[in-house]
Length: 297
Image (tube, rainbow, N blue to C red):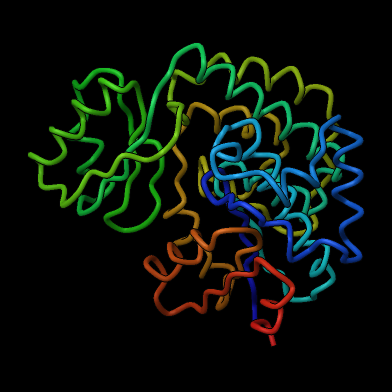
């Protein structure tokens, strides 16, 4: 069986999501992360409530770290055809492919989360899920509507838009008039994957210049282009802060790699649902705890 491993992004975090892994052999990663970041990551993974984890600064490092715990348990599997990640999850995918070390991945994710939090505090925004319209229809409907943009192309008839509060509200009315079945506000505090994240991009660029990228051991698909990473990973990671996530297109590219199973590694199971909607003929499995490992048998 040929497998694609995929890694979730912000929004998949859950209170207590580290508990299933506490005491496992890979838990030492949490202690190392605490030392590197200067924060008690064990407390965040075990004790933080939903409100604390909703903050971008906390959501990103905790989600990344849980996905990394799962990967460290599985990384010696021989049938990895390709890896990919949804926004933040792309950093985890790059660690899985050997492009980034764990320490460099943690450093970059820490900087990314802080930069996006800072940008969101300076220019508050929000996001909304649009159900019932295809990608092109959403993009066309928003032409001329100020301060709102398509942000995530997640699955057929499932697009997320992002922008200022007023922009998303106005865009929602236009989208409903254009035939959207529902427009659902999302509990986020930032206009992610839009031009409003340009200040965060500038800060992340500084951190990216400090990191050395290795050659990928397996193909890594960029969620900006739905194509394999080229020889400039830093440019792609920078661009994704202000560009839409083309997750549907990433999933639709997987069959070309012979993939017949997609395994999501990390909390939440969000990507598993998107795989089932986009690739109904492909097996989709979510691994969030040691007990889930039996699903791979």
